[in-house]
Length: 76
Image (cartoon, rainbow, N blue to C red; front, side, top):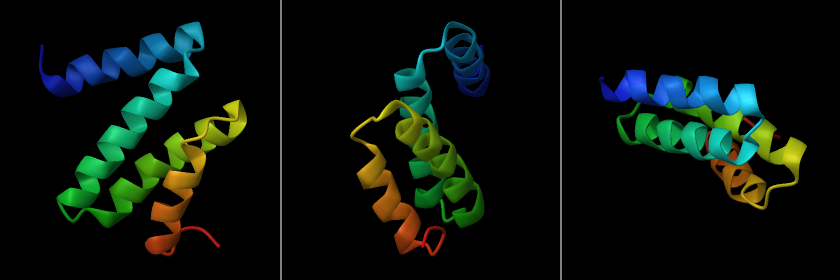
């Protein structure tokens, strides 16, 4: 199983069981990796997913993700 397939199966599983914290972890990780590669649009898209789940669940990581999205002009 490739890394992508593994992460994809983790996302599907997390959605099925409502494991919001895992979704935040995965989307945050993937978004950061994309930004490191210079893929700003896809990185911010993935971070936005993490941000939405963090906001919905009251997760403290929302403020960190928000700062990153602001830096890239995607928020406020």
